[in-house]
Image (tube, rainbow, N blue to C red):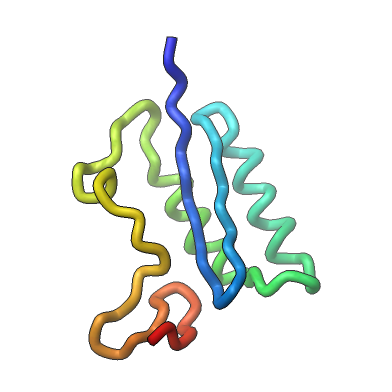
Length: 93
């Protein structure tokens, strides 16, 4: 029996936040996002937690990712015109 693992990730400058979880651990993952956002030692903000929480909640139980997401892992999503990281607003180019 295979068990699907979900992935949400955020790149902020030199830091990488990668969360791996199965469908049973969605609630725990959401709580972890809140803990990271409340930790002043991390650059992980409440905005980051909100964006990733929305992604975690939108993952449907046992549904495969769209083909466009399966074939690429381009983190962060960068606006090709401004060179800004769309999640954090940091310059990446």
